[in-house]
Image (cartoon, rainbow, N blue to C red; front, side):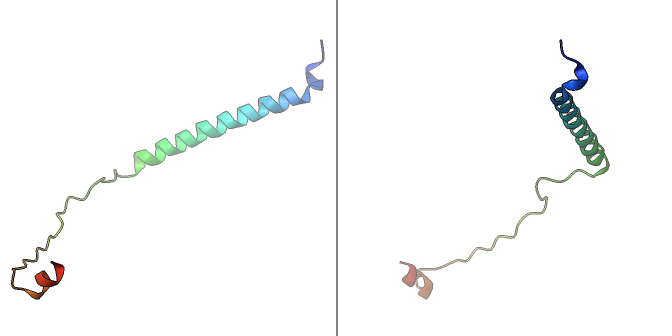
Length: 67
């Protein structure tokens, strides 16, 4: 059986996996803390929109050009 210290690639893989896990845990903690401190964002506006209606009678110039 080979010596564990001579298998450098195994240590490199283990170190990479450990760093990825550490980065994931850190990012999750930061995301959780920032979400807790920030006020909730509204998904829709509560203010009604203004609606303008233009009435066109049959004798107007705009109606004759449209039809």
